[in-house]
Length: 244
Length: 193
Image (cartoon, rainbow over all chains, first blue to last red; front, side, top):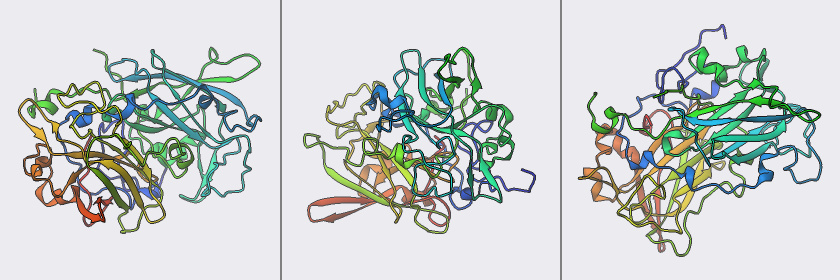
């Protein structure tokens, strides 16, 4: 992004990691970003609890996006396995937590009434899946590699291939919606959504890595991506109102 | 103690509804017939900085049950659990920017050994154009405990009213209206949580 853009200073959480609400290069932020400072509040039971442990209804089929359209047919595209661990910021695995994912099909088209660009739809691909992490915090999806797709943010704008992830974790502090990208994609440098993440280190952590140990012969390529959620830990400052 | 850097937030984008709002993923109705507590409907609009309704947002709520107890192991009571109540809701917004829930009014929740919090509901908002979700709280305008609430006092006085849901009735139905203004005049007080 070479043009001059305005970046707001209203940020939730870690300034090294989380994007600002206003990032003008991503046009939709302009009228949807708060302009007043976020309120610093003490963390209470309301924030240190959350729905993550109580909502866990998934079936094994939900984690197979190549077949979960239920048509009997298989989605078209490069079959991939996406797996990794969900950890908290102290390195503890986050077990039994719900992940919900959604993505474009191999041609870069979403099954959504508002996605009307002339990429073909795939009748055997819904582009949504979910699973729970196991006791070690491991999740695993079988899907197809999504295509890049055009959007109207700026002239000739294309989103790099990505998979959307939504996670709850153990508390309200750990709620996260994010996107996983694929390695070596020339569109990364051109994407205002990815580049709204303030540091290169934090952007790199959104990129999965190819892992030949995950790849299954005669079947599917393997990608590894770990996710780190904020743990349910109140800092001394937050509980007592005094820095220590 | 190891400290791992967090995974960054990214926008939910415009195409989440088939996944996050599919029939078995959205949760407008939090109550069952046996659930204890006063039935209320929560309804409101999500508005952008031009006052235009946001038709592609998602609103999630998290609340304690009628006894002020969260369905979560970190809450040890003393309020009792209600096996018919999880306390989690998820609604999309329609073309008019409207979201809604059928739930119960939560009880007061413990703040610390000495203090209670006024009844409130945690509210989280996601949409295209939000690189992070927004976090706020819904309080009930007719609740006298608001004056002593230990969290509300962190909100500048002139912004507190943005967190008060307005009570009305339709027949025997109690409705609390809570509009979420993302930007500009009347901007909702959002929390750094």
